[in-house]
Length: 480
Image (cartoon, rainbow, N blue to C red; front, top):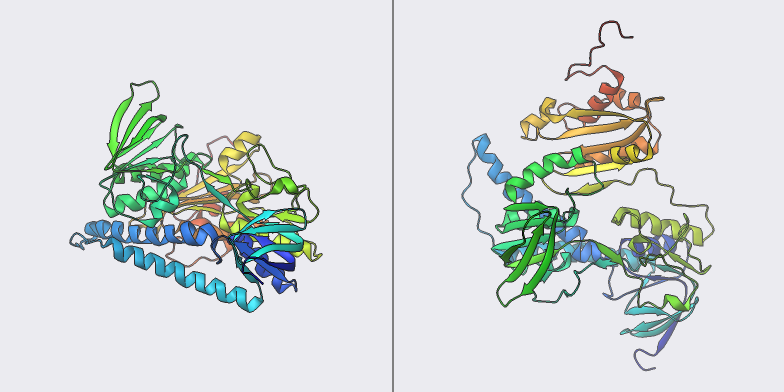
């Protein structure tokens, strides 16, 4: 048989090898299904592992180390200026990726998941054609679409290898450390990668069309980070549009127009475009199925990840919502469980989100802005970290922990943290919301001292009116 002419039959086909795809494939295999997975890379991990979550966090850890050496000066420890070898940094980052890729490959192989390199295009509700692969066609009983998302480019611009306009993936490739970098977009991708390049030595300018950074995140959580970035970035321009860009051999010419002001002509070594992501739902043959899409191209699914086509499910970024790997993995597991007949559904109360900047920001459950928009009464309690012993020992007194509590029954509805280690602290908030815990439960659970985790209990104590490390609010005379 000629290579590329082979056909394959499988019970379940998973299209896409990212967090959603391999999460679905692994769960389905564990439940006894014959599983084939198709991915253009021919390996597992997707965007998150190869050009997203993992490499960005590796570089952010490096950035944090560099920033901490500067902060150590106030503690009496002084370091000489670091020497950064970009090639060695790239090699270290790649070792991290390769190690995790190898681990996933082994897990898939031991589960019996067949991973096929190529691009899948649906021919019908029961078959796909494979482009640039050893297998030409796969017939299946059911399929899961997990094709993910791709960065949005500015109109008229194209991301290309070696170009001076970078997507997040190209920025993580770390071709060089430009003397100057323009970051377009004040979301978490722009802030995280801007921080990496600033720590490595680039003069970073950030522009954002809206009047704030991290739109959708409670403003009070963002304020300490914005103050910090004002010192790390060369410039931050809010309510500013990019009107014109022109790529030259050694620079990019840009015209910026602040709201209500005259345009500014500037030059930068490179430009990072971080204005969002769009679903990869085009070009995969969905017109040959009964799958339906939103106007923005997201696949429409129910809470069991079913599409309008009875044979096909969809999970991860391609279905919209928050584009986070942990949410995608859970959706993949749900789809696999539903396919084998289990009673399963995506009924998560609290999807945690983390911005890995300095300081970090994390939140889960109901936000204050969501409560305000819905007209839902909540009691908001904040414990400033300047009253935390642990925060003082590490110089993190700018942070705070925030609880949103139902004023009627004391149930915890939302949690927000701004400060060092927020990535770990938010998990207690997730558990509290998922279990329907009361503020009293959190306050009475012993937390070790001195830790930042104590701030979650102290915020709960504020709601109960019995804080230890901050004065309780006194009732005014004559009031009940």
